[in-house]
Figure 1 (cartoon, rainbow, N blue to C red):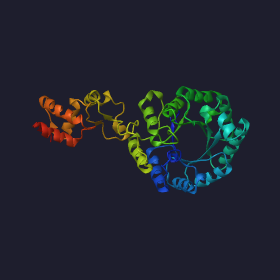
Figure 2 (figure 1 turned 45 degrees about the vertical axis):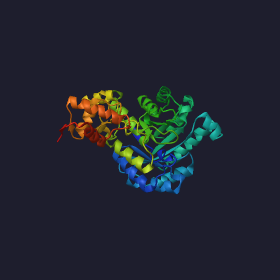
Figure 3 (figure 1 turned 90 degrees about the vertical axis):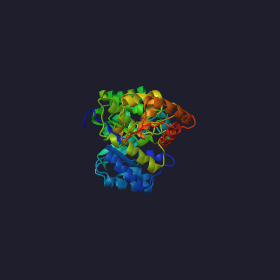
Figure 4 (figure 1 turned 30 degrees about the horizontal axis):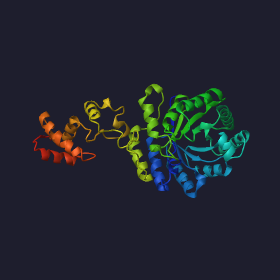
Length: 390
C-alpha cells in the first residue's frame, strides 16, 4: 500500500445501523454492501455477528458476495464473540476480525471494575484468539480519546506483539479537539515500538461536530485508515462522514493523502442509504445534501452563473450531482431570473427583464421558492412577448 493511501473503512452496516429506527434486513444490507464495494471502500464492517442471528446471517451473506473489499466483523474481547465472528466470515475472500476493549479510566473503573494491567491481558488474549482464525486482526482501544497517552502506547505495543495488524484509536465519545486527537496519533507514531508495521485507524464520533476534522487530523499525523459512514450516520450524533473525508483529501492535494473511492458515486450511494434506512439527509449536509450545490442569494447566483468556481470549490459532477441549482427566492437577483427564464424557454432583453423582475418579486414575497410553473405565470401576467428559446 502507498504511504499516502488512506484506507476507507465503512461501518454504515454496523455503527450506522445502530441509529434508532434504521434497522436493515439482510437483503437491504446486501444491496448496500454491493454498492460500497463498487464505490471502492477498502473495508466493509458488515456487523456484530454475535449480537443476533439476523446479524450473523447478514455478515455471512455479505462475506459471500463482496469481491474486492475486506469484510470485517465486530466483537468484544470475548472468546465466543470471536468464534462466532470467525464462523460468520468464513466465506470472505479477505476476512478481518475487529476486537477490543475500553482503555480509558472511566471504562476500566465503571464498565469493567478492572485494572490497566488486566485490561491489557484481556486485549492480548482476544487478539491472539482472533489471530488463530484470521490473519487480519484489528484491535480497538475503546474511548482512546479520553485515554492517557502513555497507557494507550503500552496497550498498542502489547497488541502489536500479540499479532494485531490494525490499531483503532477511537474517539468514542466525540470529546477530542482536532489538535488533541492529531497529537495523540503523533504520540503513538513516535513512542510505540513496531507501530510502523501496523495501520493506525481513526474512528471518530460527532458529538461536538468534530468527527471529520478529528479524522483528517489523525491522517495528517500518520493514521492510514479512517472509519466512517455514508451520510455520517451512527450512534448519537453520528460518525465521521465518508463523503466529507474523501472530498477533503481530494480537494487538498498538498496533504498527499488519497483514497480509492470513486467520488462520482457518492451522491448515488448517499441516496441509496437514505432510502433503505428511511433517514433523510439534512438539506445542508456537506457534499450530498440537497442544498450542497444550491444557490438562492442574488450575489452568489450572479457569481455562479458567470463562473461556477466563484462560489463552488467542488464541481457537482465530481460527486455525482448533475449540476448546480439556481433557486429563485425573494433574495434572488435579475441574473438568476434571466437564467431560469431561459431554462424554461424565454430569452429576455434587459428592458423586458426589468418589467418581469417586478412581477417576480411580488410572487417571491408570497412564496418560499418560485418554481418553473410560476415563471410561465409571471410572463403571462406581465404581457411580455419574449423571444422563445428553441
